[in-house]
Length: 164
Image 1: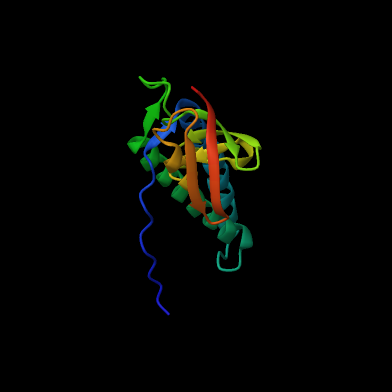
Image 2 (image 1 turned 135 degrees about the horizontal axis):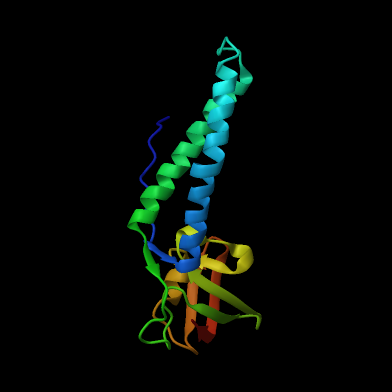
């Protein structure tokens, strides 16, 4: 058995202004609030003596590695992101940041906002631009029928409204 994992497909490099604010707040929380507290607790635990059997020291160091890893990821990701804040030149088509109202084949209406992969939140109705539905909706207009094949099966939607 091999440990090889194929590389992940590249994520979209777009983010809404609210999404960027959320990621910057998380970065600030980790770097300026949590990391100093954990660093101090690791320092206090190290002063107690034998580090090999000191659970506070071991778990503190593990938490520091987790924080540092997330900080590195957020820093790199925020550098390469493009913030999309304004509506597109043609508001009659679906682009990044659109709020789309769809009707499925059963007559049920759903509302989705197309966002970047870092802002994904299905409970709020935020779907990724990289998701099958997000990709299928791009550049479509009102009253267009969209069909997708997802892990849950084949779905058909009609676009009812587009907002920005």
